[in-house]
Length: 152
Image (cartoon, rainbow, N blue to C red; front, side, top):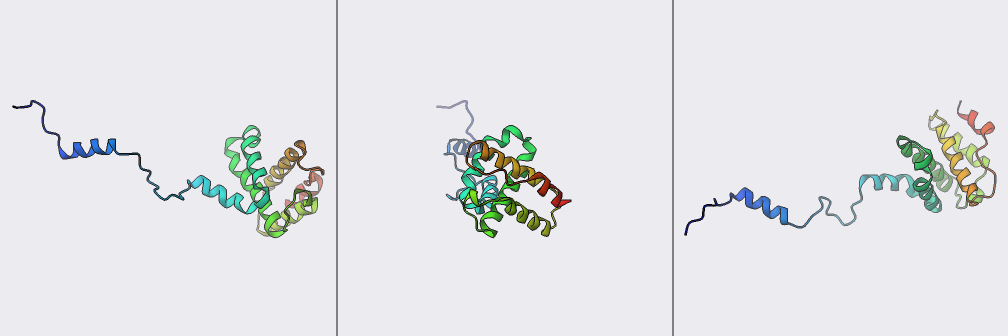
């Protein structure tokens, strides 16, 4: 008996078999994390006990009040500040953060050669949010008249 259908080429068979193969990720390592997750861990990992609050702020407030292009800057500013708070100042409680902590952070950033003051606004807005949720009962530790001119 003769069939009118031509025999499939080996390359066609391979293509059909791969289409039916289970979806296998290119990243077979079980501990694989996408680059965005790894970057977030690098920035927020050293923020210790403050990380859950920072992540909550970044997920809920930042997308509403900041342009999409600014989100990475905000995360970086807040992450650097709290990394300084945890690692350099050995502070583990929000109530221990004072205006003098902000001043020391600004001096540290100036020592690294940073000239932009955008991070001050990001940190100030973060503390305004904490105060609005009654998670921080002191006044904002960022004092505009004291901290804004420090970078100029």
